[in-house]
Image (cartoon, rainbow, N blue to C red; front, side, top):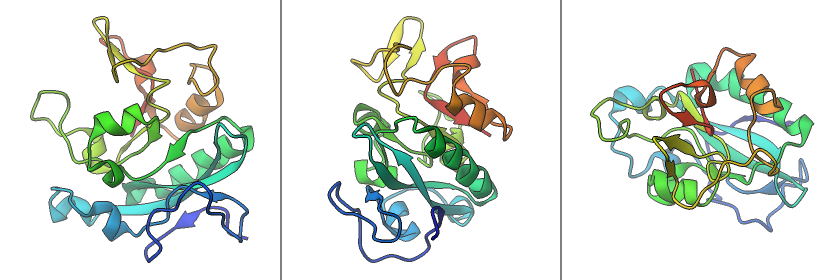
Amino acid sequence: MVALGIVLRSSTGVGVASTRSSASAAIIDSQITLWESLAGAEAPASITQQLRIVNVRYYSFDGLLHQGQLVVHQKLMTDIIAIFRDIERSKFPISKVIPISKYKFSDTQSMLDNNTSAFNYRSVGVTTVLSKHALGRAVDVNPFLNPMIRRGVIEPEGAKYDTKVNGTIVAKGVVVRAFKRRGWRWGGDWRSLKDYQHFEK
């Protein structure tokens, strides 16, 4: 049984919560092709040619096993598979993992839906500097529960960082350990702002 892997071809589109995978008994949250995940993105070919779509499994807040997908740089595929295997074993809850194309590449809408995602061709804030997400080198996990806090402003709007809430990422927790073990940096360690959802490499 293949629990995790890379999907290059699929014609089924985005799955719904009631769809189950017969191979793994996981609820399918996303099952699309790389081409579908990039449709509408304004990224140049020099970037998109380096991207791959990876199947990941995780327990969601319903207590059941789910399968979603992350679009990441090809050099980080092995990391992502290993990281999510650690997270799956711990049963740390992740709401959903769906490529951000579902949200028309709106970071705000994806965060408000508490969706975990990676690639999104965009800049950092109001600057012209490309985000690590634009290269498929960053992952945001449960963003509504793990917001970015800068000078008292919380994004996404309405979010709250409360370490007592299940699904919240904490410094010594399994999610941070899983990423840091593979050399990723956590936004919760930053001094100028706190981006608790964010991991990059």
